[in-house]
Amino acid sequence: MTSEAPSSSSTAVLELRGLHVSYGAIEALKGVDLVVNEGEVVTLLGANGAGKTTTLQAISGLLKPRAGEIRFHGERVDGIPPHEVVALGIGHAPEGRRVFPLMSVLENLRMGAYRFRRVPREELDRVFGLFPVLAQRRNQEAGTLSGGEQQMLAIGRALMGRPNLLLLDEPSMGLAPLIVSQIFDIIQEINQQGTTVLLVEQNAAQALKLAARGYVLETGTIVMSAPARELLSNPRVRAAYLGEGAE
Amino acid sequence: MCLTQHFWQFLVPGITLGSLYALIAIGYTLVYGVLQLINFAHSEVFMTGGFAGLFITQALVTAGLTPHGADSVLYTVTGLVGGAVFGAVVAFLLERVAYRPLRRRNAPRLVYLITAIGASLFLSNLAGKLFGRDRTNIPELYANDVVFTLFGAQVRVQQLVIIGTALAMMLLLDTVVNRSKLGAGIRAVAQDAQTASLMGVNINRVISQTFVIGGLLGGAAGFLFGSYLNVHYQMGFLPGIKAFAAAVLGGIGNIRGAMLGGLLLGIVESVSQSCMSSQWIDVVAFVVLILVLMFRPTGILGQRLGRAA
Ligand SMILES: Nc1ncnc2c1ncn2[C@@H]1O[C@H](COP(=O)(O)OP(=O)(O)O)[C@@H](O)[C@H]1O
Ligand SMILES: [Mg+2]
Image 1: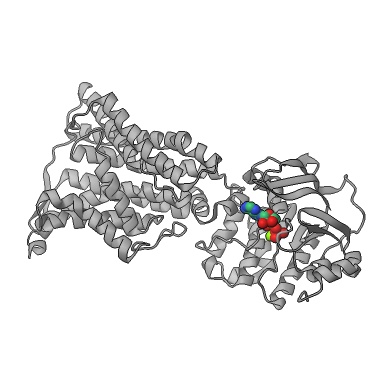
Image 2: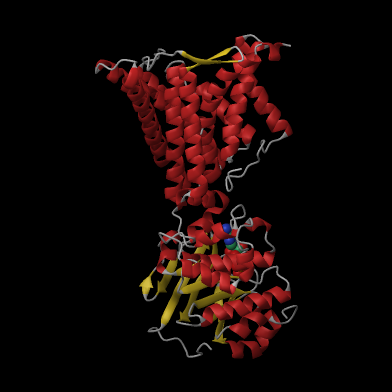
């Protein structure tokens, strides 16, 4: 399992320091600090509109921070365009899955390996091993897959870039509970194979079962940061994020 | 019935014209696919190809080339390549100078449209100023003999050159878009630009590439069109608008749609000459455009660049 040791910068894969991101006049992130260590699953929890997606998009270079820094393996990556960030080893399965609907499953996976000269065979085998249904549907147009299959494709596609750090934005969104636990099992497997994971979720119950540590984001500010076990038993978290329909 | 009487006589010129419309229409559709922008200055990219071909072939005449034998092949190929390259250069610069600054500033749609129209007027008037406002004929490239007769209609060398070149370029493009990594990048950006960038696609580079590809085809079409009729600073206007209509007819954003729409429009336009006086011909394309927008606004094949058809 993953370690619950407090962050130490020597093993930090990702560090956010005082991250501010704005959409015009709207300040979406107001000084976010967050650390993900090598080999961990860390979850970032928060209600709709808290700023979770904004955080991931800033890490990937889709959004430019107004202030603060983002370090990946100790190097500043804020301000680097997204197509260069992915080449550093950050994979991103975006909110809403965002598969290329008119491409086949296989073409989507090839897009995930776009940064490589040729599609790495072992990565493709790994993805098909994790998600056998994708192998079965390899020639099917991605837009015709079920929601769960599209989510698997989005994660598989991100893995094709051979990331050290995998960013997952609400992989449980809109999926039936059975599919959700299936996907969370696979996220755990991906982590055990050596990929560090930053998991954004509203489904706190599932996410905290999987993660070593968690952060709680409220309107652009981190309000809590603790080992997953503590968050699970924290009354405030229970009331806000585990109260209803979370199971 | 007027349509059936001279059908074959008008069919071959229709396919000839239609394959040129198709080449131009691809430029509109590609750029629309990745930027959702109607690049109205594409007609001037076409015009540039005409002038480039004109000057190159004139230089070859001065150098002593004659429209016979091996010379005529060299003539045609040089003119084509020259037209294509100049079209590509102008299209590339157009994107860099006119559109990219707007993207950086997140300009509203209307600003793009006005910029496109402004760039179109600027380029055509610049050409008028630099090269004069007369119609000029591209030197004869080859003896335009009748090659064969199809149901009583004569088919000439020039028609075969135009149709053959256009088909070859379209086949090549279709292969590139559907089979190459370059094509995968273009299709990914057309389907979801933000996600494409998360995969490592440089969006700006892909946008440049689509302008260059559109410019290559449009410039080559300009040379072919110029050798069919003549070269003129406003030669892009009508073919440009008609090719735009053809792109809408096939489904804007859809490459195979642009090919089909171009061919259909050329044929319909040409064949209707047997029913009406030639002054009315230019109206046909617009009637088709209006009918499509009324009854099938997504075009024949639908608006999807992701998969070519
Ligand atoms: N493109 C945008 N333009 C303006 N405001 C935005 C945009 N995207 C998100 N926001 C705002 O930023 C805040 C954070 O949004 P987001 O990061 O999507 O939250 P979450 O992913 O936690 O639901 C919200 O208030 C949202 O309305
Ligand atoms: Mg979100």
